[in-house]
Amino acid sequence: MRVVGRRSSVDEVIAALSEQLAQGAWAPGERIPTEQDLVAELGVSRAVVREAVRALVQLGCLEARQGAGTFVVSAADPTPMLRQLRLAALRDVFEVQLAYDVQAARLAALRREDADVARLRELLDRRDRAASPEEFGAADVEFHSAVVDAARNPLLTEMYRYLRERLRESLVALRADSALSEGGPEAHRALFDAISGRDPEAAARAAQAVIEPCLTSLRGVVDERGTAQ
Image (cartoon, rainbow, N blue to C red; front, top):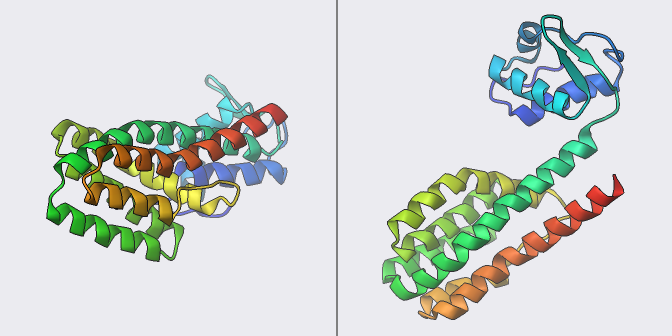
């Protein structure tokens, strides 16, 4: 089994275990290696292995038997179902972002200062120049966080801080998936112009126009794949 590294995510461990299942490393009814053995083989923490195995149990690929270990139920590739779950999670994140961003944009247009405009312009340029999904995700989150900061509402800022990492991961996934759409540079430029021009209603509309393509795309893909299963 390939080592995935100590900093690997649960998703990577799930992928490694799924690959073993699909290749028939363990037959249905056979017990998989112990948690301790998987930790040693994969080079990750016990918590990561435990969460990955739990996910495969929930998907019906594995069965945990008290005192006996974890056994293979099905060798079918769980990747399509995992992808469906990830897309549904992305949809949830963007639905929350829509609620936050519309109000933040409206307030930012009313309360922004010249320094906020300069910061937003810099971050927008960085977003447009992003060369990889990771760079794009980081730059986009920084831009939207700067909009929230310009709203000058401490509670909104605190709530958005909680969302930041989930949002960054979601944007990276969005950029990496060719089946999904996103609000392009024109929509973000319109948001910047509305905030700079102190037009709160235009800013709110622009913020919605930034997020809606993501949500529409995600809802369509999730609904389509959910119906097909």
